[in-house]
Amino acid sequence: MKQSSVEHFRELLLKMRKDIMNHMEGIRQEEAETSLREEDGDNSSIGMHLADQGTDCMSQAQNFLVVEYESRVLYQIDQALQKIENDQYGVCDFCGSEICGNRLEAIPYAALCLKCQEKEEGMYNDSYPDRDFSMADEDMGEYY
Ligand SMILES: [Zn+2]
Image 1 (tube, rainbow, N blue to C red):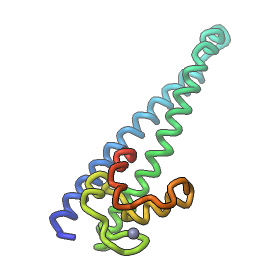
Image 2: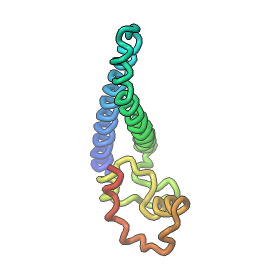
Image 3: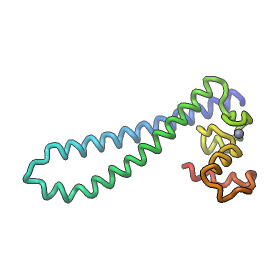
């Protein structure tokens, strides 16, 4: 891959990384505030506390899912940055062929080419065993 393209994707990756870090930091602060509220709740506020609890629990569960998802993306971004360092960026981890530029534009941290990605997903979901890989470009949006 051209050095200028690599730089372009490095910037994309670093920006994504920063956005995710900021977002996760926001969630962490939110959670710290929530637990602070819970700690200084005395008996007189128990009624109110219980009323609050439902919504707190729900948003905490949602936050947990978001943080879990974002940690995974963060890990993949770090892997991709590592590949840039090693001059391996844009090369499929599985088969070693080049990952196409459109795919990297949509998912700069993609570690696998489309074919290998589909194959790997096929291991968990074989409802489309004969799917034509050349048609698969459309569903890239779901990673966002
Ligand atoms: Zn591959």
